[in-house]
Image (cartoon, rainbow, N blue to C red; front, side, top):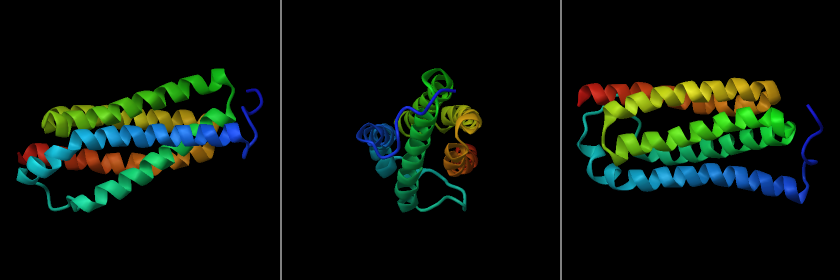
Length: 165
């Protein structure tokens, strides 16, 4: 592995951090746009398990997770040379796309069964991302653990909603 891309605190480094976090929040925003009408019209009509969190929990949790994801990706980008970072960041980008795909499947298409398939793929991709990040930056891996825990819970919730409806 070669030297870091830039020293912490430089303008380029801070711009890269802002871009990384911004991309993750942007994906979250796209997911929110796909979700908005269904949350108001369709989702309230579904039978949900007793452990379903109140709707107000999702926004703050996802915002925090997207910020941590962005910081994790930035740390990997910063800590590794281009060749070393390419694989982990490619898998990170793929999981981010699948994350958006889950919102499309569940809320956009209103298809909890399809969403179960997508979220299981997401679980595996986030786990793979965390393991790949670990090889580059241990803290980046730890930043993904809350995300992994949340989507594991979301998987159980998704399966329950699918089964109840």
